[in-house]
Amino acid sequence: MARLRIGSRGSQLALWQAHHISDLLRAQGHTVELEIIKTTGDKITDVALAKVGTKGMFTKEIEEALVERRVDLAVHSLKDLPTELAADFEIAAITTRENPRDVFCSAKFASVQDLPQSADVGTSSLRRQAQLKAIRPDLQIHPLRGNVDTRLRKLEFGDYDAIILAAAGLNRLGKTQLVRQVIPADVMTPAAGQGALGIEIRRADAEIRQHLAFLDDPAARATTTCERALLNKLGGGCQVPIGAFAEVRGGRIHLNALVAHPDGTKVLRESREGNDPERLGNEVGDTLLRRGGDAILEEVYGAGYALPQQP
Image 1: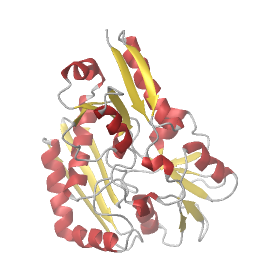
Image 2 (image 1 turned 90 degrees about the horizontal axis):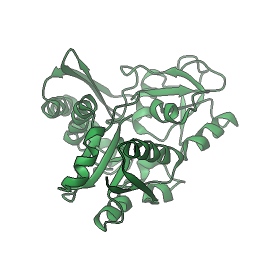
Image 3 (image 1 turned 120 degrees about the horizontal axis):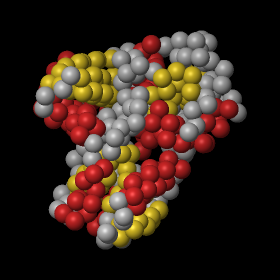
Protein backbone atom coordinates (compact mmCIF):
# COMPACT_ATOMS: atom_id res chain seq x y z
CA MET A 1 0.00 0.00 0.00
CA ALA A 2 1.06 3.61 -0.60
CA ARG A 3 2.06 6.57 1.54
CA LEU A 4 -0.25 9.38 0.41
CA ARG A 5 0.08 13.06 1.32
CA ILE A 6 -3.10 15.18 1.18
CA GLY A 7 -3.10 18.96 0.73
CA SER A 8 -6.02 20.86 2.22
CA ARG A 9 -7.10 24.28 3.38
CA GLY A 10 -7.22 24.73 7.13
CA SER A 11 -10.86 25.69 7.67
CA GLN A 12 -13.01 23.45 9.82
CA LEU A 13 -15.01 22.25 6.82
CA ALA A 14 -11.93 21.71 4.63
CA LEU A 15 -10.32 19.65 7.40
CA TRP A 16 -13.49 17.58 7.82
CA GLN A 17 -13.38 16.85 4.10
CA ALA A 18 -9.67 15.98 4.16
CA HIS A 19 -10.06 13.71 7.18
CA HIS A 20 -13.06 12.03 5.55
CA ILE A 21 -10.97 11.15 2.50
CA SER A 22 -8.05 10.16 4.76
CA ASP A 23 -10.28 7.69 6.61
CA LEU A 24 -11.48 6.13 3.36
CA LEU A 25 -7.89 5.78 2.10
CA ARG A 26 -6.66 4.29 5.39
CA ALA A 27 -9.48 1.76 5.20
CA GLN A 28 -7.88 0.63 1.93
CA GLY A 29 -4.60 0.08 3.77
CA HIS A 30 -2.79 3.30 2.79
CA THR A 31 -0.69 5.47 5.10
CA VAL A 32 -2.00 9.03 4.93
CA GLU A 33 -0.46 12.36 5.95
CA LEU A 34 -2.14 15.77 5.86
CA GLU A 35 -0.54 19.11 4.99
CA ILE A 36 -2.54 22.26 5.74
CA ILE A 37 -2.04 25.01 3.16
CA LYS A 38 -3.25 28.61 3.52
CA THR A 39 -4.72 29.93 0.27
CA THR A 40 -5.31 33.45 -1.02
CA GLY A 41 -9.03 33.11 -0.29
CA ASP A 42 -8.25 32.24 3.33
CA LYS A 43 -6.11 35.35 3.73
CA ILE A 44 -8.75 37.77 2.37
CA THR A 45 -11.50 37.78 4.98
CA ASP A 46 -12.82 41.35 4.97
CA VAL A 47 -13.96 41.64 1.34
CA ALA A 48 -16.94 39.98 -0.36
CA LEU A 49 -15.68 37.18 -2.58
CA ALA A 50 -17.47 38.60 -5.60
CA LYS A 51 -15.41 41.76 -5.26
CA VAL A 52 -12.07 39.95 -5.13
CA GLY A 53 -12.05 38.29 -8.55
CA THR A 54 -8.85 36.38 -7.86
CA LYS A 55 -8.39 33.37 -10.11
CA GLY A 56 -7.97 30.15 -8.14
CA MET A 57 -8.26 31.96 -4.82
CA PHE A 58 -8.89 28.70 -2.95
CA THR A 59 -6.69 26.42 -5.06
CA LYS A 60 -3.55 28.18 -6.32
CA GLU A 61 -1.26 27.49 -3.35
CA ILE A 62 -2.46 23.91 -3.07
CA GLU A 63 -1.73 23.31 -6.76
CA GLU A 64 1.75 24.72 -6.23
CA ALA A 65 2.28 22.09 -3.52
CA LEU A 66 1.18 19.40 -5.99
CA VAL A 67 3.65 20.62 -8.63
CA GLU A 68 6.44 20.71 -6.05
CA ARG A 69 5.48 17.15 -4.97
CA ARG A 70 4.96 18.22 -1.37
CA VAL A 71 1.53 16.57 -1.61
CA ASP A 72 0.16 13.77 -3.82
CA LEU A 73 -3.49 14.78 -3.90
CA ALA A 74 -5.67 17.72 -2.92
CA VAL A 75 -9.19 17.60 -1.49
CA HIS A 76 -11.37 20.50 -2.64
CA SER A 77 -14.97 21.54 -2.48
CA LEU A 78 -15.63 21.00 -6.18
CA LYS A 79 -17.33 24.38 -6.55
CA ASP A 80 -13.99 26.03 -5.64
CA LEU A 81 -12.14 24.34 -8.51
CA PRO A 82 -11.87 26.24 -11.82
CA THR A 83 -13.88 24.59 -14.58
CA GLU A 84 -10.75 24.43 -16.72
CA LEU A 85 -7.76 23.08 -14.82
CA ALA A 86 -4.22 23.93 -15.80
CA ALA A 87 -2.57 21.29 -17.98
CA ASP A 88 -0.58 19.99 -14.99
CA PHE A 89 -3.66 18.69 -13.15
CA GLU A 90 -6.71 16.44 -13.37
CA ILE A 91 -9.68 15.54 -11.18
CA ALA A 92 -9.06 11.90 -10.28
CA ALA A 93 -12.28 11.41 -8.32
CA ILE A 94 -15.56 13.13 -7.54
CA THR A 95 -17.05 11.64 -4.42
CA THR A 96 -20.64 10.72 -3.63
CA ARG A 97 -22.50 14.00 -3.41
CA GLU A 98 -24.01 15.54 -0.29
CA ASN A 99 -27.25 17.54 -0.60
CA PRO A 100 -26.31 20.30 -3.10
CA ARG A 101 -29.10 22.68 -2.10
CA ASP A 102 -28.90 25.91 -0.12
CA VAL A 103 -30.52 26.26 3.29
CA PHE A 104 -32.21 29.13 5.13
CA CYS A 105 -30.85 29.56 8.66
CA SER A 106 -32.49 31.75 11.27
CA ALA A 107 -32.94 31.97 15.02
CA LYS A 108 -36.40 33.52 14.70
CA PHE A 109 -38.00 32.86 11.30
CA ALA A 110 -39.13 29.67 9.58
CA SER A 111 -38.52 30.47 5.90
CA VAL A 112 -37.58 33.14 3.40
CA GLN A 113 -41.25 34.07 3.02
CA ASP A 114 -41.68 34.44 6.78
CA LEU A 115 -39.04 37.16 7.04
CA PRO A 116 -40.40 40.61 7.95
CA GLN A 117 -40.27 43.49 5.50
CA SER A 118 -36.70 44.75 4.89
CA ALA A 119 -35.16 41.96 6.97
CA ASP A 120 -31.37 41.69 7.06
CA VAL A 121 -30.00 38.60 5.29
CA GLY A 122 -26.35 37.60 5.16
CA THR A 123 -24.65 36.14 2.08
CA SER A 124 -21.62 37.08 0.00
CA SER A 125 -22.84 35.05 -2.98
CA LEU A 126 -24.21 37.03 -5.91
CA ARG A 127 -26.04 33.88 -7.02
CA ARG A 128 -27.90 33.65 -3.72
CA GLN A 129 -28.45 37.41 -3.54
CA ALA A 130 -30.00 37.51 -7.01
CA GLN A 131 -32.45 34.70 -6.28
CA LEU A 132 -33.40 36.12 -2.89
CA LYS A 133 -34.07 39.54 -4.41
CA ALA A 134 -36.15 37.96 -7.17
CA ILE A 135 -38.64 36.54 -4.68
CA ARG A 136 -38.24 39.18 -1.93
CA PRO A 137 -37.00 42.48 -3.40
CA ASP A 138 -37.51 44.20 -0.03
CA LEU A 139 -34.77 42.18 1.72
CA GLN A 140 -31.55 43.90 2.74
CA ILE A 141 -28.60 41.73 1.68
CA HIS A 142 -25.35 42.10 3.60
CA PRO A 143 -21.89 40.54 3.10
CA LEU A 144 -21.13 37.41 5.12
CA ARG A 145 -17.59 36.00 5.25
CA GLY A 146 -15.80 33.65 7.62
CA ASN A 147 -15.94 29.95 8.37
CA VAL A 148 -19.19 28.16 9.21
CA ASP A 149 -18.88 28.72 12.96
CA THR A 150 -18.22 32.44 12.46
CA ARG A 151 -21.23 32.83 10.21
CA LEU A 152 -23.54 30.97 12.56
CA ARG A 153 -22.25 32.96 15.53
CA LYS A 154 -23.02 36.23 13.74
CA LEU A 155 -26.55 34.96 13.17
CA GLU A 156 -26.97 33.95 16.83
CA PHE A 157 -25.67 37.35 17.97
CA GLY A 158 -28.40 39.04 15.94
CA ASP A 159 -26.24 40.60 13.23
CA TYR A 160 -28.67 39.13 10.69
CA ASP A 161 -32.29 37.98 10.68
CA ALA A 162 -31.22 35.05 8.49
CA ILE A 163 -28.27 33.73 6.53
CA ILE A 164 -28.06 31.41 3.53
CA LEU A 165 -25.53 28.56 3.56
CA ALA A 166 -24.89 25.32 1.69
CA ALA A 167 -26.67 22.31 3.15
CA ALA A 168 -23.64 20.10 2.49
CA GLY A 169 -21.24 21.95 4.78
CA LEU A 170 -23.69 22.10 7.67
CA ASN A 171 -24.61 18.42 7.28
CA ARG A 172 -20.95 17.37 7.21
CA LEU A 173 -20.12 19.37 10.34
CA GLY A 174 -23.32 18.39 12.16
CA LYS A 175 -24.27 22.05 12.61
CA THR A 176 -27.88 22.02 11.44
CA GLN A 177 -29.54 23.44 14.56
CA LEU A 178 -30.43 26.76 12.93
CA VAL A 179 -31.53 25.31 9.57
CA ARG A 180 -35.19 26.24 9.13
CA GLN A 181 -35.73 25.53 5.44
CA VAL A 182 -34.02 23.54 2.70
CA ILE A 183 -34.64 25.86 -0.24
CA PRO A 184 -35.96 24.00 -3.32
CA ALA A 185 -33.58 24.05 -6.28
CA ASP A 186 -36.23 25.65 -8.50
CA VAL A 187 -36.40 28.59 -6.06
CA MET A 188 -32.67 28.88 -5.39
CA THR A 189 -30.56 27.04 -7.96
CA PRO A 190 -27.31 25.87 -6.31
CA ALA A 191 -23.77 26.60 -7.44
CA ALA A 192 -22.21 24.25 -9.98
CA GLY A 193 -20.58 21.36 -8.14
CA GLN A 194 -22.02 22.30 -4.75
CA GLY A 195 -22.03 19.37 -2.31
CA ALA A 196 -19.35 17.36 -4.15
CA LEU A 197 -15.69 16.88 -3.31
CA GLY A 198 -13.11 16.95 -6.11
CA ILE A 199 -9.83 15.06 -5.62
CA GLU A 200 -7.13 16.76 -7.68
CA ILE A 201 -3.84 15.14 -8.66
CA ARG A 202 -0.94 15.73 -11.02
CA ARG A 203 -2.01 14.87 -14.56
CA ALA A 204 -0.96 11.41 -15.74
CA ASP A 205 0.05 10.29 -12.24
CA ALA A 206 -1.31 6.83 -12.97
CA GLU A 207 -0.33 5.29 -9.64
CA ILE A 208 -2.14 7.91 -7.55
CA ARG A 209 -5.13 7.84 -9.89
CA GLN A 210 -5.41 4.08 -9.43
CA HIS A 211 -5.34 4.41 -5.63
CA LEU A 212 -8.18 6.94 -5.79
CA ALA A 213 -10.40 5.22 -8.38
CA PHE A 214 -12.69 3.69 -5.73
CA LEU A 215 -13.67 7.19 -4.56
CA ASP A 216 -15.16 8.24 -7.91
CA ASP A 217 -18.97 8.21 -7.96
CA PRO A 218 -20.45 7.87 -11.48
CA ALA A 219 -23.63 9.85 -10.72
CA ALA A 220 -21.68 12.67 -9.05
CA ARG A 221 -19.20 12.68 -11.94
CA ALA A 222 -21.99 12.94 -14.53
CA THR A 223 -24.06 15.63 -12.80
CA THR A 224 -21.14 17.87 -11.83
CA THR A 225 -19.52 17.50 -15.26
CA CYS A 226 -22.79 18.79 -16.72
CA GLU A 227 -22.98 21.70 -14.28
CA ARG A 228 -19.34 22.67 -14.78
CA ALA A 229 -19.72 22.53 -18.57
CA LEU A 230 -22.57 25.03 -18.29
CA LEU A 231 -20.50 27.29 -16.01
CA ASN A 232 -17.57 27.12 -18.40
CA LYS A 233 -19.77 27.94 -21.39
CA LEU A 234 -21.03 31.03 -19.58
CA GLY A 235 -17.47 32.05 -18.72
CA GLY A 236 -18.29 32.29 -15.03
CA GLY A 237 -16.55 31.46 -11.80
CA CYS A 238 -18.01 30.41 -8.48
CA GLN A 239 -18.80 34.01 -7.46
CA VAL A 240 -20.95 35.15 -10.39
CA PRO A 241 -24.77 34.87 -10.44
CA ILE A 242 -24.94 31.55 -12.28
CA GLY A 243 -26.68 28.46 -10.89
CA ALA A 244 -26.61 24.88 -12.14
CA PHE A 245 -28.28 21.79 -10.70
CA ALA A 246 -28.22 18.44 -12.50
CA GLU A 247 -29.85 15.18 -11.44
CA VAL A 248 -29.93 11.70 -12.94
CA ARG A 249 -33.55 10.76 -13.60
CA GLY A 250 -34.42 7.46 -15.21
CA GLY A 251 -30.94 7.13 -16.66
CA ARG A 252 -30.99 10.62 -18.21
CA ILE A 253 -29.48 13.84 -16.89
CA HIS A 254 -31.87 16.67 -16.09
CA LEU A 255 -30.28 20.12 -15.80
CA ASN A 256 -31.79 23.25 -14.26
CA ALA A 257 -29.71 26.37 -14.84
CA LEU A 258 -29.92 30.06 -14.07
CA VAL A 259 -28.32 33.39 -14.95
CA ALA A 260 -29.48 36.40 -12.95
CA HIS A 261 -28.66 40.01 -12.27
CA PRO A 262 -27.55 40.52 -8.66
CA ASP A 263 -30.48 42.85 -7.96
CA GLY A 264 -32.97 40.11 -8.92
CA THR A 265 -34.65 42.17 -11.65
CA LYS A 266 -33.48 39.86 -14.44
CA VAL A 267 -33.63 36.11 -13.90
CA LEU A 268 -33.25 33.60 -16.72
CA ARG A 269 -33.95 29.91 -16.07
CA GLU A 270 -33.54 27.01 -18.47
CA SER A 271 -34.19 23.27 -18.05
CA ARG A 272 -33.35 20.40 -20.38
CA GLU A 273 -32.60 16.66 -20.41
CA GLY A 274 -29.92 14.72 -22.22
CA ASN A 275 -27.57 11.76 -22.14
CA ASP A 276 -24.20 13.44 -22.64
CA PRO A 277 -23.30 15.55 -19.55
CA GLU A 278 -20.87 17.93 -21.23
CA ARG A 279 -22.99 18.42 -24.35
CA LEU A 280 -26.09 19.11 -22.24
CA GLY A 281 -24.28 21.73 -20.15
CA ASN A 282 -22.94 23.43 -23.27
CA GLU A 283 -26.33 23.45 -25.00
CA VAL A 284 -28.14 24.94 -21.99
CA GLY A 285 -25.35 27.51 -21.63
CA ASP A 286 -25.72 28.50 -25.28
CA THR A 287 -29.47 28.89 -24.85
CA LEU A 288 -29.09 31.09 -21.78
CA LEU A 289 -26.57 33.31 -23.59
CA ARG A 290 -28.90 33.69 -26.57
CA ARG A 291 -31.83 34.55 -24.31
CA GLY A 292 -29.96 37.48 -22.80
CA GLY A 293 -27.55 35.89 -20.35
CA ASP A 294 -24.63 37.45 -22.21
CA ALA A 295 -26.00 40.95 -21.58
CA ILE A 296 -26.64 40.22 -17.90
CA LEU A 297 -23.12 38.89 -17.36
CA GLU A 298 -21.52 41.77 -19.25
CA GLU A 299 -23.40 44.19 -17.00
CA VAL A 300 -22.31 42.29 -13.88
CA TYR A 301 -18.66 42.28 -14.92
CA GLY A 302 -18.81 45.90 -16.00
CA ALA A 303 -20.18 46.93 -12.60
CA GLY A 304 -17.19 45.36 -10.91
CA TYR A 305 -19.11 42.63 -9.10
CA ALA A 306 -16.68 40.00 -10.37
CA LEU A 307 -14.02 39.53 -12.99
CA PRO A 308 -14.82 37.51 -16.14
CA GLN A 309 -12.53 34.60 -15.32
CA GLN A 310 -12.49 31.31 -13.50
CA PRO A 311 -12.52 31.37 -9.69
